[in-house]
Length: 89
Length: 164
Image (cartoon, rainbow over all chains, first blue to last red; front, side, top):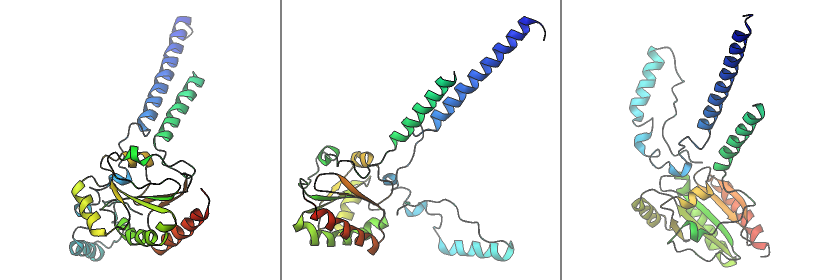
């Protein structure tokens, strides 16, 4: 490590790694901005609002499944998931 | 290097925010004729205008129609204009819903979402109350029954009493 050529090479590599990580960081940030992501706007939720998109399509089946969990698995709740819907109001 | 990175981060964040800016209080109402080409729109000059974005798949929108009919009956003669902008993708669903609701105020179809893209309503329904000078004064997101109707009534009466 005392060799000046080796030391300079080590510095160059360190600087290159820093620049690369910076570039990747900027790229990642840009990719996460609204410019890149496809977001479903509130006025575009017609398909999400269709009954077939609901997580509770069959209320009887759902209540029976929940009853089975309640009585057999000794656990209940925590079953809510993000389903469909228009997200209105 | 550090300053360059900071500048890039600032540019990215500014772009991200400006792309999602919805129409807000204090902004002028855009020319609706340009956003809704081909639509028959009422004269809004020196009127208090209520622009409402609705869709046939949106239950609160459906609930808001009787309220708008009452407001139309009560305040149209005093200078209120209500415009209902439907954002349904399918023209048939827009037509069927419009026919069923019996709206006493003009309805227009934003088939290309040009108006919706401009206003960028944060929820469905969203309505914009515009004063006689053409400035957006109130934005209502969602419809919460009697509470929203009472708010509309109070705000419309205040705006109608203002001079042009």
